[in-house]
Length: 305
Image 1 (tube, rainbow, N blue to C red):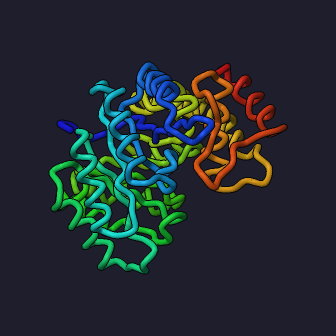
Image 2: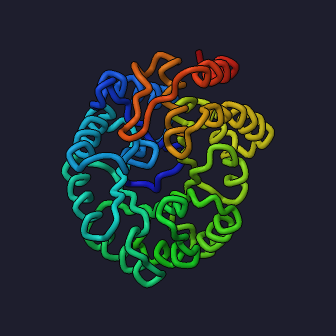
Image 3: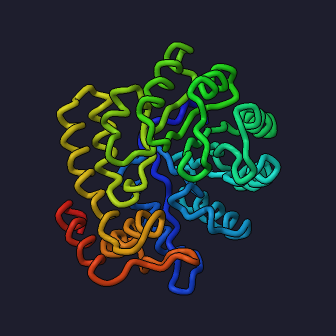
């Protein structure tokens, strides 16, 4: 990318057919839904895409399809998430082949790692590609929190182009933002929170990567524009409305993690006519029953149906 990635960059969901294949017509509708709303980029193969459930072949299929549909309208960054460095670099090669604009990697996981291994991991991945590398800080999934001082150092040295912060640690994010400013703001700082994006903007975020942005991208675009203009009353109003819409993820009964969160997003998009199904990757099952009616009611309340 010629300029740093800022603004609204939704982590793209992956619609699936009833038999679990990539649903290209629904994916085409979703990409149009986002681009027409004015998003600033698309993050493919993130957590919301169900990347952890995909084979390498499925990852390549999704990337090829998404980049073809986006066709350069906005930047596409690709998740290259895997357990250890060599596997991550293998995904980087696939991302390079389809022509993405940047790659996103977590800290290594499964095998226990510490600060030394995490630093070496990011330095090795960055050295292996000319694409901008974004760190994805998501301790709930990889069981380690990346220290803000390390992220700031790697940004100052040009190893990292930015950070997608899904840590849930607002103090850490504010510290990172302060350190990044002190270094001349070399990194783009993007929050992965749906319901406290307003606070992240006040702390120094350059944008957001909200899963709920698949459902209501226009709301996040309005909030970003208001934040950049210093219109904090509009920021608060949009954030309050989006927080109310986010209640969809608490409607499923007996589901946790992506089965509840991503499942609710998919169900909302089906009710909106964007997706054909709300099918989830195995072993997750789709949301059914009364939960669907409650999700639809919240989507209708938000004026999206």
